[in-house]
Amino acid sequence: MSETFTKSMARNIYLGGSVFFILLFLALSFDTLGALPKRDNRHNITPQVALGKKVWEENNCLGCHTLLGEGAYFAPELGNVYTRFGGSKEAIMGFIASRPVDGIPGRRSMPQFNLSNEELEAVAEFLKYTSEINTANWPPNIQG
Amino acid sequence: MQYSSQAVAKPYFIAAIGLFVGQILFGLILGAQYVIGDFLFPEIPFNVARMVHTNLLIVWLLFGFMGAAYYLVPEEAERELYSPKLAIALFWIFLVAGALTIVGYLAVPYATLAAVTGNDLLPTMGREFLEQPTITKIGIVVVALAFLFNIGMTIISGRKTVVNIVLLTGLTGLAVLFLFAFYNPVNLVLDKMFWWWVVHLWVEGVWELIMAAILAFVLIRLTGVDREVIEKWLYVIIAMALITGIIGTGHHYYWIGTPEYWQWWGSIFSALEPIPFFMMTVFAFNVVNRRRKEHPNKAATLWALGCAVMAFLGAGVWGFLHTLAPVNFYTHGSQITAAHGHMAFYGAYVLVVITMISYAWPHLQHNAPAANGRAQLLEMWSFWLMTISMVFITLFLTGAGILQVYLQRVSDTPLPFMVVQDKIALFYWMRLYAGLAFFIGLCLYVYSFFAKGKESLASS
Ligand code: HEM
Ligand code: HEM
Ligand SMILES: [Fe+2]
Image (cartoon, rainbow over all chains, first blue to last red; front, side, top):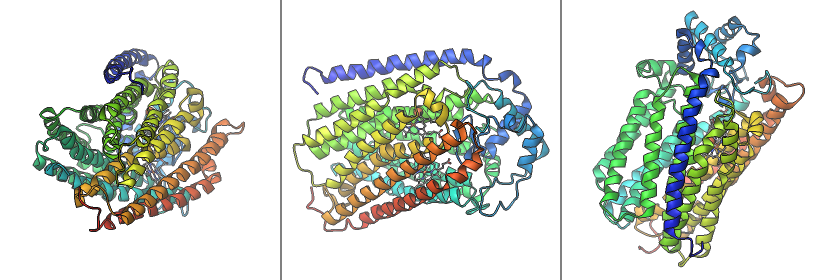
């Protein structure tokens, strides 16, 4: 790099640039927090949804599935599974409850988590809540 | 080795390499489960193997960063480490906590681990990369703070070089941003939004500072190029990293419930994120070409140049590939993401840690500037084998990803996820073979350590 561009100029760009963009990022994040109530479906967060999220987390569902496109890519997207299963919580509960303990020979299979009925209902309710978040029309289609 | 306390880096580097081997073994299990669905089921379900794979990656990179800091900070500060005893104590605490966590993942169902570690009190588990029990997370924070204290005290009372200050800034940022791992609201959108403050602001923010500082340190030593020149580069690179990378977080805010304006902010700024990686490549080749001396450690130079190039390919090129919102709409959460994640982590962070080890190890082990020719040759072979394998892993996953995106999301008759997975299985088989080749390269790398033997070059 040329002699006219000195080390202290470089340092000033680094310091000034970082401070400026940190502040801009904080401002944008703050604005986002204000915009979220209209988009994030928070009015449907019930104690049951909270329990559902806990069940989701404590069984590490994200270790195989994506949720709104984030997680693992081994098993289907679940952000829209409520819609894909025809808007039926019973279908979701039935699917989770009926996984064979020893898997399916040669194929990927979901583990049997032995969830109680209360937990099954809660996780289905959590997935329903998730499907109603405004995700700017993602995923592109019902297959997730 | 100029300062005897630099020797505390040794166990850190050994642990890093050991855990790296574990990470790859579990990567192979994952790769096998992709094509033989019931492989090791139900003993090791996919999600468990994946946690082990990714968490070992993070932990060994942290061991590598800490080892690098213990090696380079005293030399830059021109004084002994503040407390070598603390560094050794922290090593054992971190290793035992990490090992217990991995054993926990493998020994009991995850829900049991959550219950016995009291996840109820402060639920932080079950989110990607942050699966560790809350007490492990607290342990990580304690270790990180004590570590920062130790190197901070060394830096403050010694010569303050740009390399040291940038490294310390990066490591402090790493620790501070990790605190967002403790924020886990029920509101999924908020949870996801701040989860990225850990993950994105790490790899596309503060870790780049750590990477650039380590590269700068090694290149000053290897090339003898004037420190002033290298420090100027260092400032410009990290300036670009933060200027683009902070707002670049927006490329994760397209489809998770956050407002649509992020599609603009995220696309524009993250499209510029390749710049700092490109500059690192130009910088590395530039100073090596203008070197003032012939350093005998050719292997370390190869790792350093390879690191710069592969980071640019993996993070810069493969990142750019799917970062614009209209593209990401289709590729989000697909095998394209996995392709990019692999090459970026390998190119930037795996290789920078190995670069540091390659440079430091002959000093630590033999008090010599370089290993003997045969050991270096083996090391260079392992570089090529691992790197070419990683290129193929990335290409096969990209192929799988393009087909997946087309069949499942673009075509007029979109197919279900599992149907598509069956159709693209050939690519997963090829990825598995490339993974085996990677593992052979890694074995060769480990073997090169034992070949470093006694007949090292004359001592420095
Ligand atoms: C033998 C070589 C390897 C194989 C076969 C392998 C396989 C895998 C598989 C199957 C996954 C899970 C993908 C999913 O969620 O569906 C994964 C995830 C991951 N692996 Fe590897 N891996 C290997 C080496 C590596 C290396 C060397 C690194 C680091 C440089 C790495 C870093 C990661 C990361 C960061 C993830 C999470 C990816 C994401 O969330 O997008 N892996 N790996
Ligand atoms: C060394 C630096 C980088 C590393 C280690 C890295 C690693 C990763 C990983 C592991 C993921 C997957 C996260 C998940 O599991 O959800 C990811 C996602 C992503 N990365 Fe990077 N990355 C780096 C740099 C970049 C850069 C420079 C760009 C843009 C130019 C970029 C663009 C993206 C995008 C758009 C996604 C989201 C993919 C999706 O929507 O599924 N990355 N990165
Ligand atoms: Fe990112």
